[in-house]
Amino acid sequence: MVKRLLSFLWVAIAVFVIGFLLHNYLLQHWNVSLRYNLFSVYLFHFVASSVVYLLLEFVYSYVPDQVGYGFLMGVFIKIGVFVLVFQTPIFYTEDMPLYERLPLVLPLFMFLGVEVWSIAKLLNLK
Image 1 (cartoon, rainbow, N blue to C red):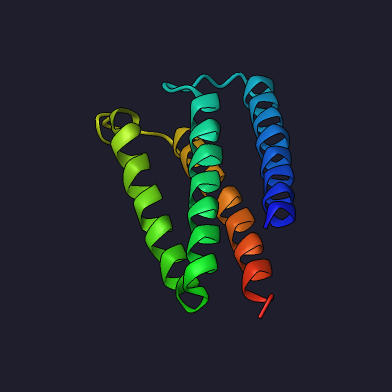
Image 2 (cartoon, rainbow, N blue to C red; image 1 turned 90 degrees about the horizontal axis):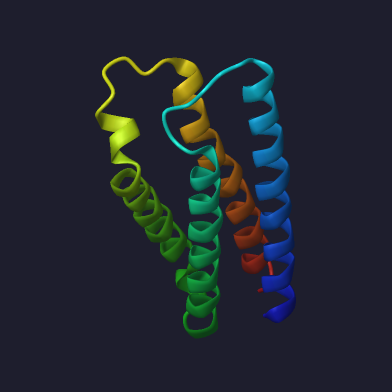
């Protein structure tokens, strides 16, 4: 369990650092300023993905057949909490251009890929 947790954390940290630095560099290169903090978006997804994975490790230790349902529940809760935390830039802007919408969604899919990869490794243990 500790080895799986450490491998997840290493991959998630790498995605966080590389994704944020590359994203921030491209935004600065194109002289784009966002209405929200990009670091907080990446940090939220890193922390939320780590919490979801820890919960799934806990579920796997007690009921390994229900990990898929736990994963779906964790993803839906993570998206719901994201919308609650970042509701101001999502809902209260009238005309949000594409260059401001993509940085909200891109980290979600990046960390979702890390979660899917780690859950697939977890489910292949059977």
